[in-house]
Image (tube, rainbow, N blue to C red; front, top):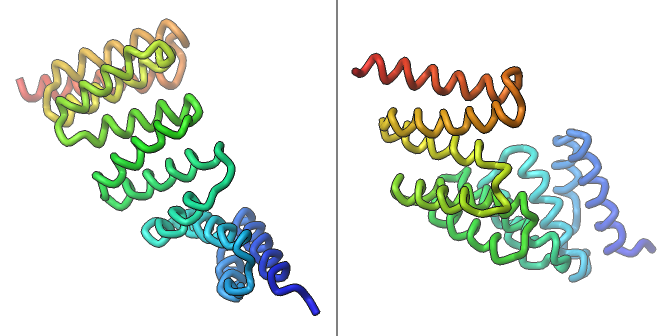
Amino acid sequence: PHDPNIVAQCQLWVVRAYTELGWYYEAEDLLSKVQVDNLSRKNAPLYSAINADLLLKTKKYREAIPFVKIALNNESKKGNKPRFQYVLAQLYELNEEKNNAHNAYKKVLKMQPTNEMDFNARLHIAQLEKSPEDAVKQLSKIAKLEKNKDKLDLIYGIIADVYLHQNDTAKALEYYQKALEIRKQVWGENHPDVAISYNNIGMVSYYKGARD
């Protein structure tokens, strides 16, 4: 007779393949037939990880949260833990659970994430601050870190967005201009990001002129 654990494990890998191919109906159908009780304790987290992946791909974000949590808690590879934690933080944010998202992104920073993940987590933490003043303060701290000097244009652009949401057009223009100058120096006049900066400045200038 076939080993029930191996049968269930093989079904899960087929579910993952279907998911990667975009065959979501087939993936959901087969996943519903997996006998979870037949999985060994060692392979049980695999079910959670594959279920979470399918739910994320089908944009069922709230339903994915418990499966991501299980996958995170059972992940043995140190390098994968920050990734699951970051996904969990993103899910909280998508579901408007701002406090949970804020705390989850902070946990990412304690897990020795990659530089890119560390940077993005810090940006999200800043943007989730309760007051615009705190958001700008956090973003300014990020800008001062030596390892982020090649991302200053992005940070300045986000600071400008914060000020714009507060209708502080003067400060928004100041930081959009800073972002523009950096982008021009790095990429020249004909880069798409430079065009975006010009568009931001033009939009805010028009809005400011209309109000003055």
